[in-house]
Length: 149
Image (cartoon, rainbow, N blue to C red; front, top):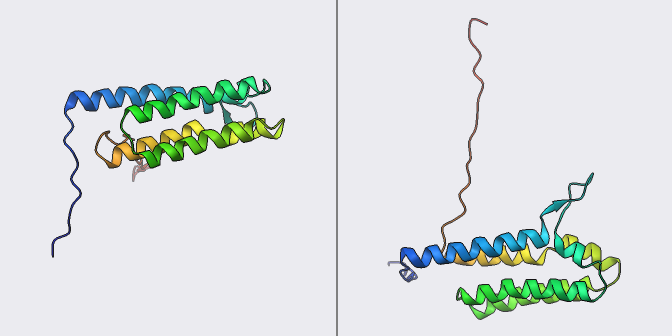
């Protein structure tokens, strides 16, 4: 018996480039919102979401609008409804719990809804052949001692 393969629709080079540019743009925004800075002495990364969230109510609403833009971009890329729903859940959770005084500010820094959503989006696009996998350089080095030394 032959296993059935799922057909991946053909995407031309221009469309792949458009998708890659869109992903790069919103990935930069997600990083800015959730991980652009390191809290000195802790190694904990945070972004503008944690800073803007310090402003009661308005800060969390502004952050949720930026997060919603990332979800809107994902919708424009044609991701399925179930993935949009999962991304919206992350935004709603971040907005709701982030609005709680003090504890919410810590939650904003640690939850990182935008980076979670970018991970979901990137993984979906890679699995469906719309985006090449992130390239990483892996190498190992060995030190060989001179036998005479």
